[in-house]
Image 1 (cartoon, one colour):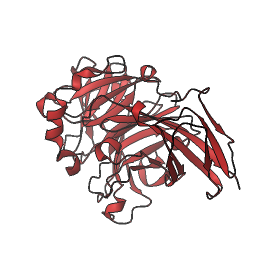
Image 2 (cartoon, one colour):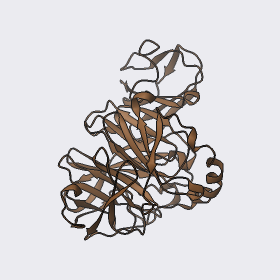
Image 3 (spheres, helix red, strand yellow):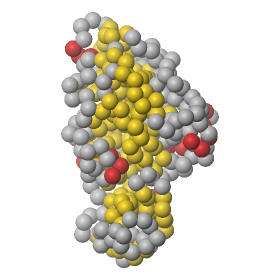
Image 4 (spheres, one colour):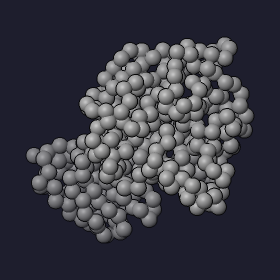
Length: 381
């Protein structure tokens, strides 16, 4: 859904970007095709095959899914009965092939009709319509509609399915912007629920359009979570169960900023991404990202060039390696930054004597390389 802070600069951005969109390396991030004109505001994608891409328009669009191929052809239009499109923002699929359509946009943080529509795999539907089952929900920690400006974190454009549950990663609109996305969980069966907050991730940025979350997906084997923004994405891996933010994370920057709002794994190492159409012929595209050519999922620092010890630790730990130009931060499990310092070349002793016992996350940001590396650290009494 559109947002004033985003679109106040949209025309200017379009003018700046119109000459640079073709510069991406085809091996890393390539344009596959233009989407059909009827899908001018693609806000989510899901696959029923490598070249069968289901998408839709967001707020105020018809309650319709459009099936496209990788040549940009419109193959089928499927009307979703018993559903309404106040603000469709993402779509996901379970291991039985059922689709879940998220009517979860909440730009003003004041909506009380948040819904997810569940339909069978659309490839199995005969005809041009299907009736949806309804999942309704609210957030367990939202008590005012809207909340205060510094708590505007109940908009959502990222919906994922994993192991019998649906997961929502919020789109931060706090003023001032604090860069955090909250993760919520609810059942995948029809009914009315209170979504449980289970995690927080600090994207670490202050530029709203680059660091709010606009879509998400989980890889087919459940080993990776991808969260998208307008010009970058985060790949989470090495987590246990649904503690998605408890493993390692890598940030991957794209060669341009557009209104990217759809992401879906094609395989464990390949993703499709879509964006909405802008002026000057920008957007309304299907892109392909190959993780193998970006190094995603691999540590930014090879094992032989960075050491962290001891871990677990008590009063201090040591970072040893080539750390020139990197920034060190430490976060607790809620996403709150507990300490931070700019570092040069190692080894570096980090004093954590004042931190309570528990699990923390060390984040090294290497802006020149456009990457972020995160590691779990356990502090003992």
